[in-house]
Image 1 (tube, rainbow, N blue to C red):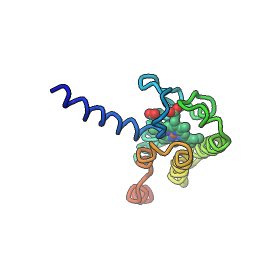
Image 2: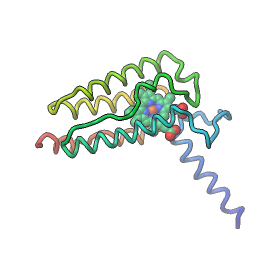
Image 3: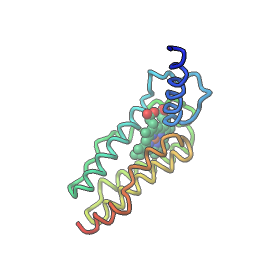
Image 4: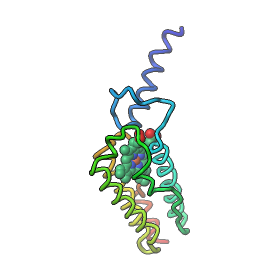
Length: 151
Ligand code: HEC
């Protein structure tokens, strides 16, 4: 019985792990139990994004709590990836979009929020496509944007 369960379970584990990771399946240095500081920061950024989205939909003030400027220094699963100029440029751009979101006002905060999600997506497209499906869900939909317009 045990034998029959192991295979599908291993398969399930791999599909979810592979979807969430940056897709470097050959790297044996990744410890499945020891997530990098950057991976943990990214999860916080995702949670914070969901929270901001909800605040926007509720029509209240928005707050950004995540330590987003640690993006440039947090230790990554694959350090060579974040050492690249490409990563640094995207990180700087992302920080600027968070700054604009913090400074936005009622008339442009939804737009500033969408631009910030764009910045997540752009970096991920280049350096870490795995989580893009998850990040995409942070976008405000057309219907949600329309409902904000009438507020
Ligand atoms: C400058 C590039 C860059 C930006 C901007 C960026 N990411 Fe990431 N993201 C990465 C890299 C690189 C990793 C892999 C981290 C690791 O494994 O050490 C990652 C990992 C992730 C993960 C997977 C974490 C895990 O559980 O292993 C999620 C989810 C994520 N990012 C969401 C986001 C969200 C949401 C945003 C915007 C609010 C964002 N990212 C912005 C580069 C970026």
